[in-house]
Length: 266
Image (tube, rainbow, N blue to C red):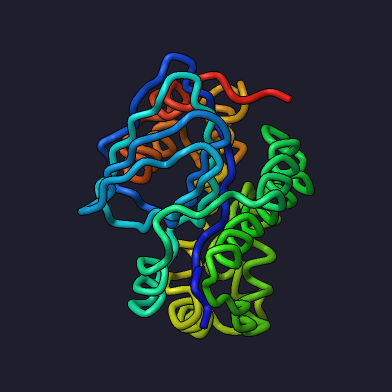
């Protein structure tokens, strides 16, 4: 079966808590792998409370309230499947995995490679980092002994629409344009998206726009208005409203939270 399930992309990053620190409480929106390269971290996640020691990783399920307490000088990384839609069976399989799993050398190498792409605005570099983030999760699942099978192929019409969205999300797009690219009617395209991605084409488009905009907020010094226009938002006000709905914070707060701690450097 497909354990990771449908999602709207992958993200990878890392951070150092020089004097120690906390994160949360928060409700985990994603399927997130957290790993500690140096130091340690105490995690409360739902009804579970445990220590994540140096050289260990844990997989956190969406929908649970989490709180993290980091030891001083802790360096930890994470990789996540954004808005993963897990089946009940997949949820139970992940929940039954060992709480803490040793970080393998190949996972460390995948993370190191992914971070060489951090902050790049080049589409190829961003695509590479996303692919490596997906590989990190797959690597962990393999190391933990979970069964992982590839995603079933999507209909050609959906693939065509996705290709247009991912390569031209900055441009004005509507259902008619997506339907023309997919070579089917708009209503038919909506039905296929709901069946295979559990969303509509336009909702998916805005998910991609919002995800890319939040990535630019966190990883670049571009102005907020410029980011809004670069990612297909018609006004900074619309951008701010959507970011608040998605991240629970304003664009400035999202950037401040991302820049509050220094990132690991090579």
